[in-house]
Length: 254
Image (cartoon, helix red, strand yellow):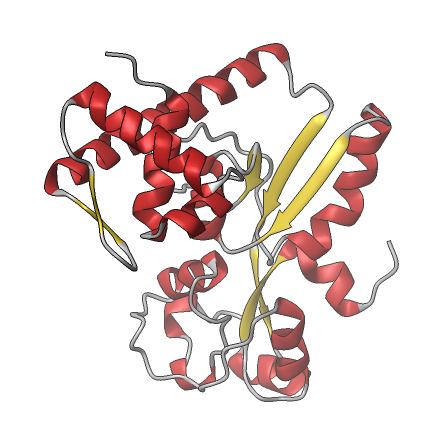
C-alpha cells in the first residue's frame, strides 16, 4: 500500500468542494490529474472513496472516515512543521495575530521594535477576534497571536506579556454621578455600552459586572473601541476600556 500526503490533500479538497473541477482548482492542479490521484488512492486502499455523479461528487461512508483521518494527519503534519520552525527560529518570517482592542495601541510601539531587531524580517499582521485567531494558529496560518488570557485552549502555549487594567469611561457628568466607590457589579446595565459579541473585552466586562449576555442594556454594540469612546464622550452611556488605550483615546501625546 503506497499512500501519499498529496493524495490525502486532494481527497480532502474533493470532499470540501464536492466537485472535481473546483477541487482541482483549489489545490492548483488539473482536473484529470486530481482524478487519477483519487483513483490511485482508492486502488491502494481497496475501497471506493467517492461516488462520481454527473454534476457532483458524493463521499462514501468509507470515504468519510478516510477524510476524517486524513484531516487529523494534516493537522499533525502542520504541528510538526511548526515545532521544527520554533526549534530553528522563525527564519526571518513572522505571521502575528492580534485582537482589535489591543492592535491600535500596541502595534505602533511593538512593530518598530520588532523591525529594529531584524530589518529583514518578513512580517505579517492579522487583526481579528480571538476565536478567529485561535483557528488560524491551529491551522498554521499564524505563528503567534496576542489575545486575552486565559484562552481556554489546551493545545496552545501561552506566555503573559503584560497586565492591563479596566478603566471606566464616560462623560464627566456621568462618571461624577456614580460617585467614587462604585463597584463593577453595581453598574446599571441599561447604561453600559459594549463591543459586539466575539470580542474578549465584552466577555471580560460582562464577567466583571456579573452580567449574563441577556442583560438589558443599550442596543449600541460597536465594532471598535474608538467608536465606543466617542459614544460615551457624547453622553450615550458608560463603557470599560483597557488602560493601554487611555493615552490614545484621550488624545494625550506620548
